[in-house]
Image 1 (cartoon, rainbow, N blue to C red):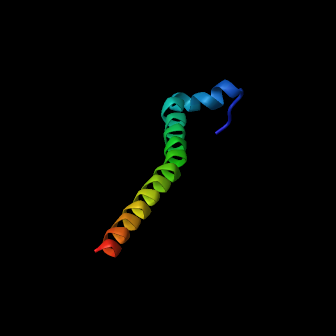
Image 2 (image 1 turned 30 degrees about the horizontal axis):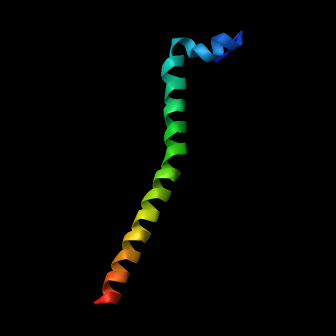
Length: 58
């Protein structure tokens, strides 16, 4: 495809909203996922430590 201007490139032949929207949603999820994974990991470690302490005190 050949674009004559930057606005034509970003319009993507009328599909720009879908194309750039898809990129934006994907980028947001790729930024959020490591944060959520770290939070889940810490919660799992805390649960394991709590369980371990309960077993030791018995």
